[in-house]
Image: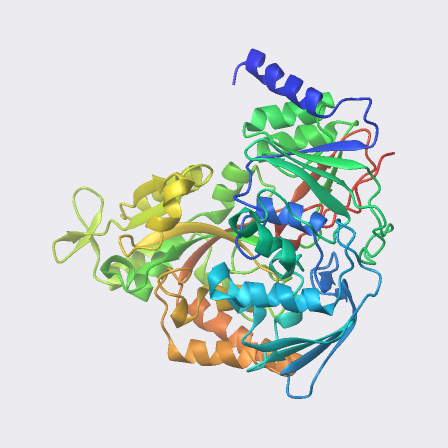
Amino acid sequence: MSRHLTWIALAALAVTSPAFAQKTVTVIREIDTDRYDPHKSTARSGAEVLYMIGDTLVNLDFDMKTLKPGLATSWSASADGLTYTFKLRNDVTYCSGRKMTAKDVVASYERWLDPETKGLVKWRMGDVDKVSAIDDVTVEYKLKKPFSELLYQMTQYFHTIVNAEQAKQLGADFGVKAFDGTGPFCMESWTPRDSTVLTKHAGYKWGPPIYDATEAQVDKVIWKVVPEENTRVTALQAGQADASQYVPYWSLKDLMADKKLTVSKAENYFWSYFIGFKIDKDQVSDVRVRKAINLAVDQKAITEAVTFGFAEPADTMLLPTVLDFNPKLDKAIYGQNIKEAERLLDEAGWKKGSDGFRAKDGKKLAPLIYGISGSFKEVAEAVQGDLRKVGIDLQIQLFDSTVAWGKLATQEFDAFGMSFPYVSAGDALNLYFRSANTPTPNRMNWKDKETDELLDKGSQALDDKTRETAYQAVQQKVHDAAVWIPLYHEPLFLVSGPKLKPMKAHGNYGCAMYKGLGIALK
């Protein structure tokens, strides 16, 4: 972008957030969401607003492990793990002023379950039998089988309690034209691909106890879409924007050195980048080949080149600090070891030809990788360069995000690039490694009876130790099978401008400002 166009964009920001609006805060982000409907969108850009305009029964502390009260003040589970009872606050109202009761909780879950809603990721509810309102402040949540992840999943924005009456009235326009929530902010307007305006929810006082404040500290938050990263950086430095987590790695040192700004790093944040293998494809069906590819890749160099050293090179699929991580995994199968990689490829029968590339039975070792264009291009090309050193001619095909997800649901590729958020080991494993989840999100075609049994055991566990043991066993299986190339674990940085008090970044679903109750003027 030219200098002239950059300042035009900044001028637009200034118009959006005039200096005289002292309690107005402008937050800039890279992309917009498709809608603000917790049952129909999995976009982080939707989540970061929905956390502010809505509430869940249970909240998550900054450690990403400790559960805190939300709309529910307390909860209990039956000995068989099939019935959860939630006691609700009696002082909660929607932005419209209507009081929220247990019937609204029931209606929210019934809407998510209703086939006509076409709700996404319903597994995050568990196998629901029935959700009932015992009285105005008591909800009974019955399952057909135990779900040990339930309370952690309830901290995710998909579990936002909606105004189901409004949702029914608006139909497809719910979360597009309006959203009546119980959160600390209310949705005033949404102009797609431009801005979302939130205003303080008058009377809100039920924020989670992880904040110093239980109500919003500013009158208005404007989420402004600024696709160009140079413009976002300049806007923060020039004081034309007040906060953002969408800052490129190359800018971080300068932003950290700027005394007008505060940069906070989320202490616990689980978002990992990886390349997965479609393990039933001829090119990568041999575990020796998959291990060799892993050993050919230099995660440290890629992390340094792509993230300027700010991310953590991955030698395990999941971050070691996540709930139920297996600390006994052999990390020797990851990390560059060219000599061992070449030995494994030789052993697997892939021999180098005069052109330097390997072949077997007249077929060249040239796996095809699919990915989403953008930042993954640099990662894919770095991996391609590493693999050529051991005689593998990686082929790359990148797609715009508008078509990439459809392409990634096909069987046309040998490997794929991906990143994903997770709140626990079970969250990640149940999503990616269940046989029933092929062809997507289990794009590896990992179909293993024992894995499914272990996932069921962990998911249905009635105590922490049983759950942990089962999930650690799954990690051992997929780790030893080298199903992925773990690349790096992404950090999360939140930049606050000069008129704001420093904010503590939260890691939940990559939404650094979470409930927005830490947004306050100096």
